[in-house]
Length: 76
Image (cartoon, rainbow, N blue to C red; front, side):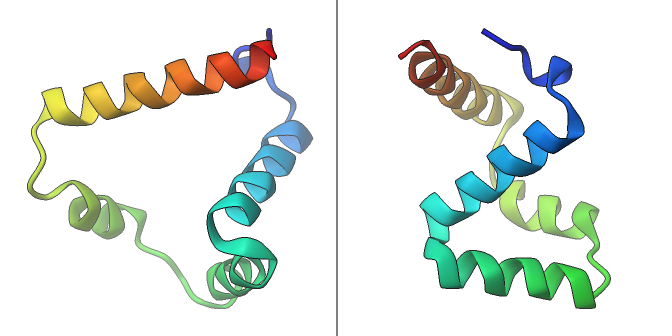
């Protein structure tokens, strides 16, 4: 199993596009990528919006659950 930090840039791009397709569908993923490409994005502001009412423990628990699910899928 590959660790995320050992993935090549191309692998990260492919996995990211797959995740977008799974979450948004092909049209939604394309729209998202086009929006990112044409507009400057403040990722700090986005992170504040996403995590504003969550504590560190909650964020960590969600990340851990997501990582466990990811490891399960990779092992298949």
